[in-house]
Image 1 (tube, rainbow, N blue to C red):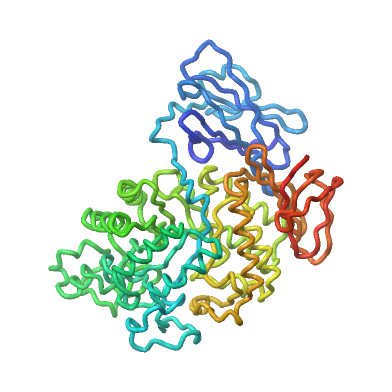
Image 2 (cartoon, rainbow, N blue to C red; image 1 turned 90 degrees about the vertical axis):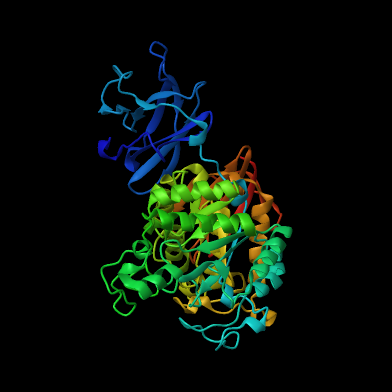
Length: 576
């Protein structure tokens, strides 16, 4: 048995409350050991009673590790536990907080302990978020609903986007096109920033309390949010709390008054005089003068930004925040921010833009989710570029799932592209079959599907700014068949609770074939993907009778199923 691979810590995600009366436990072992794991547990104050035993189920695996998981429950929610691990050769080891042992003697004193589950320690997952389908809009490029607020130099709709040009998209335009989002079936509208800013992307905020005049007015915000809510669509705004624009009032005061400015400690200044030409101050990324970085340790800055967070939730009724570059802001701020936003609306959600592993932000006291860029990267490599095989693809996703609580995995924003990346269709050399496969995987997999505006009608676009093209509204230039496909994916997800609430079990991952099940109570949906140019037959994990969720046909399977090249099956299991 590979002892070096075995890992458990009494903290998230290896030990965490899954409810007031339930503790989830995980253990990691080496994949080649084909281990069986039993957790032995009892009340931490029970010194004479026997340990209860519960087998742990296989949860995830990659080429190096496999993870096991189970839920245990005790009347007083006070836990003492240890693990028995057996490999395929029959070797047994026992794990407590002192490490691995070759015998099971004296396990009482050094057993792991999870001292108590307090109600406030239980992460309250968001039911509505898990049920959602996200639709992202870049406001300047979606629809021009009011030409009177067009900025000077507005270009003709549909011209080539650059880093600085403007096309006149606004809030009125989004409101006018809500029927498109509703008919598609998406029900969570995420807008990139709409606050006053000198750029077309608005990530260098000038005023956090006003709408950019090129987008409209506060009344336009109220109208948009109200109409969205009437249509059953939630609204999430984008905020930049890592940095401001250089024309933000506090930084303007520094430029005017230098070391005499009362806001000098709002930023990280290297010295005086401060100038946007020399950039002698900490900025977002690599010395971008228009984006000076806030000093979040300053109580005045913290209070100001937290009030911004509460204002738009309380006064405008938005349903949450997507937070730009939030991993460059300290944890204590996000904990305070979460409490403040939830005080304004307990159902509001907080989503982070973190483009990599984010477990330290997703323990339940900061973010509710992130934009799942590791998922996006894996899908691009497997479906679009076909540069990795199914085994590596499955392993990447397994490692990601093992980093987070089950509740968080069901809330991850699983995107295929965004305003910051090449569009998926461009990554796929404009092969729409690859986009269909990836989108089907996205909607059948665990997590929240996320559509970047225009992907549903076949828009392509290279790296920023080319990925920020104007939405195509001429139906003759839209791929209506692809649009119908996305509508079907959303409908199928909405009609099958297993695709929202269900656990995920990997059935197969090798070559070009990936298969997994979504299991919710007695319901099971089997998804099979053939990302190859050859017809394939799969025998592992195949039930006897199923319903094809796309065609409605009942199928009798005799221990195997054939998958055509570059295709997938979504099957509701009737009989195993």
